Length: 268
Ligand code: NAP
Image (cartoon, rainbow, N blue to C red):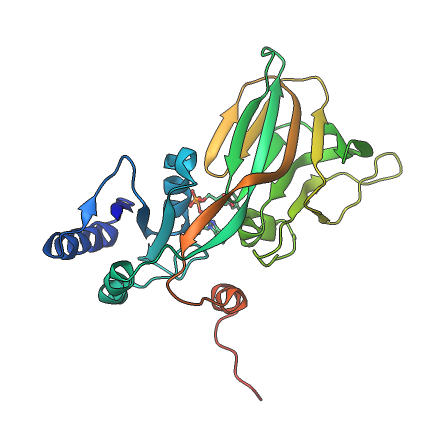
């Protein structure tokens, strides 16, 4: 099994990285940054997002493991005092994996004949800064609404606890193959009308956004920002690809949501 350690540049993460490298060398683990079987990230959810994009063209062969050096994350559930347990799990690895849905984004730019494809682990957004964004929103090829506001966000189930949640979206269990569309500052009055609530889209449906003709759109795909390109159309659907995590132990999703957003709860 070939392993890569991907850490952020935080002092604590780099210390854990050195510790893990020493332990791996003692046990003669094979390290391979080019074509790893397991990518171990050290940092936060943001670090795992970066590692995902670094290896997004190898998702069939790569599995991820996240160690958090700050708070418990949604993608990073190993603590830094569990390195020896992690090594035992790696030594007895039999390829076990848990998979989560990804967002397939296809963007048609006015200056290009062919659409450009992107993959998101959390979400993609389209926003207009300074002026109102006007866009036609289609679901499954049918015109659904004419949106006006700051922007729109389409997220995955694992991304539902990130930006989507700040926008009032629902938290979705990642065993569900679904997409969520949330509004960013929608305009609603006697003239303009949007649904004004998050929509959860079924696996076979897709969302298409046609922004009105203008070029000052700001697009985000997880941590990546794309600005200054003339967007004609963006299509979102659930990707055929999935992210795979090495499943060495059971991790209850709702417990994680509770620890991240609520904290300890005591029965009365
Ligand atoms: P960042 O702005 O440095 O951090 C964003 C925060 O979101 C971090 O605390 C990060 O956790 C957390 N996060 C990332 N993915 C998450 C997930 N799936 N569930 C719950 N929390 C999550 O940016 P970044 O670290 O590069 O992450 C990019 C992400 O930031 C985007 O994908 C978007 O979801 C999020 N974002 C949120 C808002 C908002 O809520 N208003 C605005 C812009 C972007 P860690 O501390 O563990 O890394």
